[in-house]
Length: 132
Image (tube, rainbow, N blue to C red; front, top):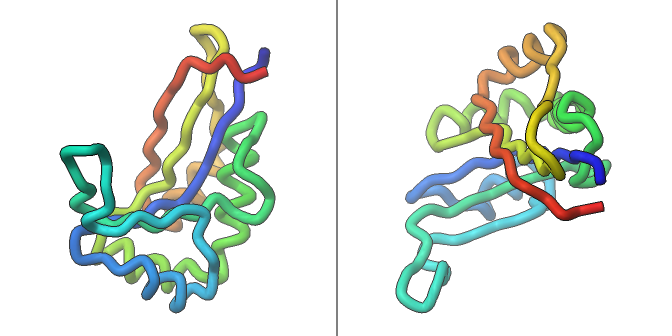
């Protein structure tokens, strides 16, 4: 079993309209959630979410490869994304799915610079995975 990563851009907020961002960016999101959608039998989501994992796929052997691919794809839309990131919550959501403990991602100075240029925080969550 090998580790793998998922990477996506997420924008969310209580007053956020995912359909507006879809129209502005002219990109079909990977996932959308609306305020009021059911979370469970007794609760609903209080924030809308728009997320995009990119055209190249949603699983990566390297976090750096996934981030670089998604940032490169979204680079022409950076200014539009920035206007939404200033008004709502935004992050590069990254999942690290690991079959054993230890290890983790390595990011080069170039990738860190590119992340800083986008001005959007990175969230990295680790999960135990039985994925093969």
